[in-house]
Image (cartoon, rainbow over all chains, first blue to last red; front, side, top):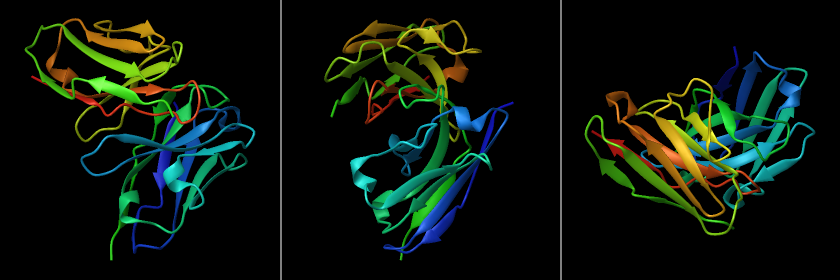
Length: 120
Length: 106
């Protein structure tokens, strides 16, 4: 059974940093692209970042230079290092699996989400 | 960047009704279009990919159609458990933008 479990939930002040993790199981992690999607309170889904199976990355413009996505295939874990956090970064962050190794595939499995709160 | 426009933003229908949601891309995306369902307080779930292919386990009352710029999600007979927000997403290239969502109520 495919499982994605996020961690790293927290409250951080504006300008602060936070690291999210997503531990995967039930599939060969290294064969798949992985993604982060966020959802501000009461709002829709926003695509944030992706890393394909060979390490190529993508970031939405609003997080470029502030967020870093990475993966550790030996530990079946996806990371999102978030810095210079703003109030508009607040929300639930979901990790999701792309249905193939590249980035151009739908997101077929999602984690339960982890909450990031940015407030002074 | 290609924009994804969903309509309507919300709708209310009766059990058994046929419901149609549209998603329009500002440029052609071939059939690289997915639909997701997010029930209140729950995680998004993939319903349809490649514009019209039903994800495994999804009830057959859901269907998708379209290609290029105009796409449709149809629920043939609305059920109480279909109350949710539905999102389209383009995935042919970055950014893999979501539509703003359509909230379906009964």
